[in-house]
Amino acid sequence: MRTVVIVCLLAALANADLFTAIADLQHMLGAEKDVTTVIDQYIAAERARLDDLRRYAHEYVHRNAHAEAVGPEFVTNPINAYLLIKRLTSEWKKVENIMLNNKATTFLKNITDNRVRSEVKFPGEEDLSGAAIALLRLQDTYKLDTLDLSNGIIGGEKVSNKLSGHDTFEVGRAAYNQKDYYHCLMWMQVALNKIENESPPSVEESEILEYLAYSLYQQGNVRRALSLTKRLAKIAPNHPRAKGNVKWYEDMLQGKDMVGDLPPIVNKRVEFDGIVERDAYEALCRGEIPPVEEKWKSKLRCYLKRDKPFLKIAPIKVEILRFDPLAVLFKNVISDSEIEVIKELASPKLKRATVQNSKTGELEHATYRISKSAWLKGDLDPVIDRVNRRIEDFTGLNQATSEELQVANYGLGGHYDPHFDFARKEEKNAFKTLNTGNRIATVLFYMSQPERGGATVFNHLGTAVFPSKNDALFWYNLRRDGEGDLRTRHAACPVLLGVKWVSNKWIHERGQEFTRPCGLEEGVQENFIGDLSPYANDP
Image 1 (cartoon, rainbow, N blue to C red):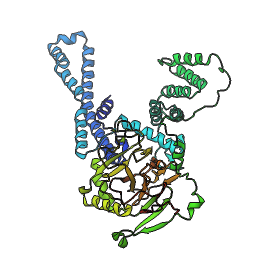
Image 2 (tube, rainbow, N blue to C red):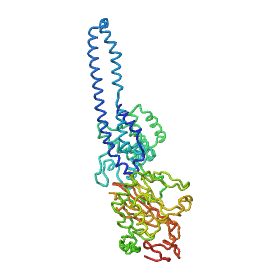
Image 3 (cartoon, rainbow, N blue to C red):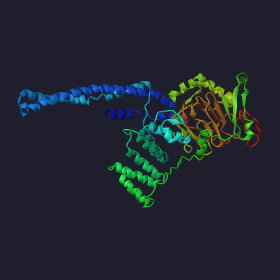
Image 4 (cartoon, one colour):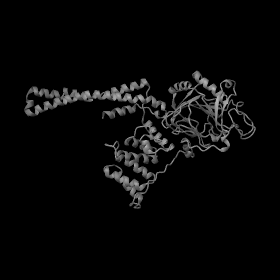
């Protein structure tokens, strides 16, 4: 009971959104140690209190045995009568005080104060749900087996401890709460298998069966749903819904297909997110990249950029990743020390990343973007100013109308579903307050290198770029005529293992009239960074 009180009070102090940034989770690591220490101290204090209660209990047993031995005549002795009354009044009050003197509140206050001093946040229910859904996202994107994942195995490698039956059940329940019966079915089935080898089981079989049966029904497996529900009614005869559900499934079948072997389980994945290129996007995230067209193979190259006075003495390495549209990787353009300064400046400012509502123009949170971000002004630190000037050197674009440097740290399964960086024509209010026009280009600095996952993928182009620390990915969002290039629709793949830190600069079209002028022919585009040719030509 006391443990329940502690957990409930801790939950009340919880902060949500921790799952959206690995940086917050890393900062939280010490919190578990603090909780363990406090619980140990609380148990020691409770032991002392319970020892006092046990001593009083022994005294009562001894005195009561003597009174019973004497019989009713015991209270005819005035001294005995006095002691009995005393025990049941003042001494009983002492017992009451000992029983009520639970020190949980004091210990909880200590841990709360420690958390405030160390600025450690504590997860809430939203974080638990977000973490479970992150596992499901990773499972789909990287085609991970449910049983392997529940046993801490990713890609054939043991990376974590096994999940218990209850751990697995909670993942399935998170899916159920999202009406995601595809995943709920798989995880509940694994949970059911796990508790067969647990003694005692970490979750009741009856709890699993109800969720599993309903998920089977939702996925079109009515006979199997009926079979499991009958088992539920048998092992939990007082279950409030089991018998009614049995009748419901039987009525649904109308006496058909009621005998014989159960049909194979049907469990089809259904997506309701409106992302038509979901399969192509996930394939790119897994590194399933289409081969480069033969005509481009010999033209993709690396070169040294020397077209600015400063770059003549400090040239920048450029790797052309693709043409039509052009995308390049600037190599080693941000140092480890600069990265650490930027992360240090950004960390206190990190807030859950937002997206712009295409109808209202307002910024809002969205499940298709899981990360935290911060904006850093150029005059905040010499490092930010230096990076901004370097961006102008290697892109050749005026930075006067660029947005501030945005720093992002991705969370559990952190991702950003397919999107455009530029505002489309129907997005009337986008960037209206900036008065700098549309986003002409994007610079994306990779400030860490996840162990697995986290690629930047261009769905319609079949291009995937996996993070390489210290490098910067660059592409133009607008064509030379100022129209949005729909081919630049891209996504940030979920981080499977490791940490992903990036920073990006969105460069706007206002002020680029001479740095990137329109061409004289329709369809003119760059073959290298700074290509100002007015006519279309092959690389």
